[in-house]
Length: 347
Image 1 (cartoon, rainbow, N blue to C red):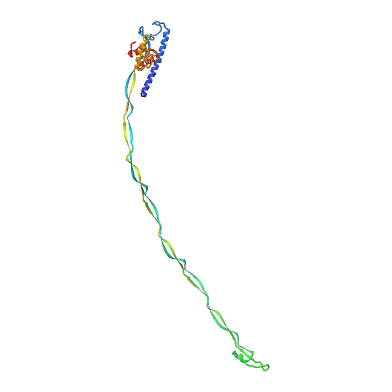
Image 2 (image 1 turned 45 degrees about the horizontal axis):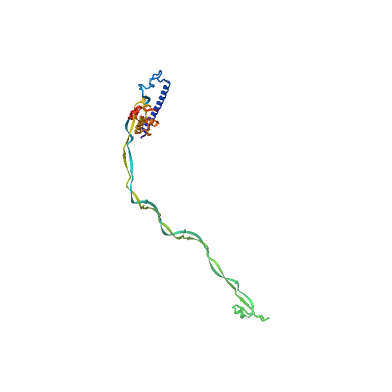
């Protein structure tokens, strides 16, 4: 049972409850009128609708609510619109061997060192120059005989012969007085050789050219300067085990048809009425008739109590429930003859 049907039933129950309250109020008013009037059937100042019209002796009547008459029809309505469901079919995989790039190819600059050679060269240490040099005077040694004492004569003692041996000229002379011989000797002149330096050439100056001084130096020179070159580093690859897609994932669209449901619609044909109807009274509510009523209500599925022939709350409630379900007049504390006839009973 869907929500719409539950709402309809709830509305109908509320309407029935209101009608029962109205019926109870009318019954109360009727009781008050009956109490204030005589037992005659003609009463002044009262409306004729307070009493059942065309009443027959020996029958019981009651103001009974005749429910509104509804027509039930079924209608097919859209419960759920058509739609589409997308199912994803997952991809399938299989093992594979794949060559993967570990490091990309690159380039780098490499320095090519310079090349050197050995050179030997004369390096000027001191440039050529001139200087003035003094040329000293030159001297020579000259020897010269210098008279020391001139030649002379002098008297000396002794024989002349001794002096004669000296090669000196001796003049003998004898002294008679003493007997000594006195000799007059010639003493020759005395000379000595004196050496002395004399200037041979006078002192002068001269210009001397001093040659340049060179030094042999061995050194390394750049034969070829340093350069750079670009070196290509190849890419590196590795073989790895992997899983590859055998069949790619896909989708499948499934059309879901619209869903329809059949609902029961109740349309009111006539409004409920409150009028006089014949009801079961004490005259025909014998134990046997009540037992037949209980049995019929039990077969119809409304009475669950004992079949004891006693009209009690359970029997009255079951009869009213049956009347409501069949659209028959319903009373709060009595059973209409219409309900008895509908059950196929004849009281």
